Length: 374
Image (cartoon, rainbow, N blue to C red; front, top):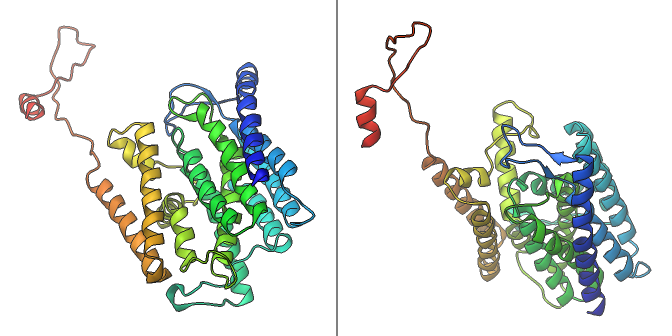
């Protein structure tokens, strides 16, 4: 327990002290995330907050984790360094989606083959239990890469990705603490401490963004935690077994996972790259409803927490029904947002002559004015 508290204190302190320095350096060197037609913010804002998150997280892990007892963690940190340099280069220079994907596959390789993290069973989901080795590896690669990108893509408004990552890491951290796996608990709480410090500067109005450096790191760590959680929670000798652990793990990462899979599907159907930008994310739909950044963040985190509580309460119902219920409720909410989305209004106008022949005045007609009043 002492090592867990130490990891929280170290990660929080280092990140909290580093962020103001990063903001100052970014302002002096003009390292900003500039507004454009698809960005929500209106002013240039530093986007290197991931540096502070990474510094606090890695230092806490190096000090608090006993690597001789958990040798796989050296490979987890190696994967973190791969993701860190990948995100840092993208934040400063911008890299192509294919290069980003290759880097993510390399990080997943370190986690799977060296860290021995793998989904070997579906634990009853759709009636499936043990998986063939080849399918197990493909599913694990897919899961890790989707989770990494899910936090990268959900990072669209102030505080959202950090808050969802903080919530998920705390939940995983407490579970691993209860089942006497301190190294994994430290991994989770080290990330939680860094994110808690970062959110002080990232809540609306944000003074700094985490950038790809931070969002990719959150996705990577949570992918490790959720795969390990699914494996451990269904073990027969674990102190606190959880039936339907895949469904609980899915619920913990519900918002980023389902939103990413939905947006990827829309892009593929429209014959576009899954990594091409757009404004179809759930936070964009809520912004169009007039909600603020803070309201959207609190709403989505609350919905995610409720999904976790309900899924845990229904854990005896089986993975299949819980996951199907989560998916159905989520997409029903998305459908409601689309149906009530404000549509652009059409204006009927007519041209009139003016004293200045070179000018063209286009006033609204009477019918349109009356319609606007109604």
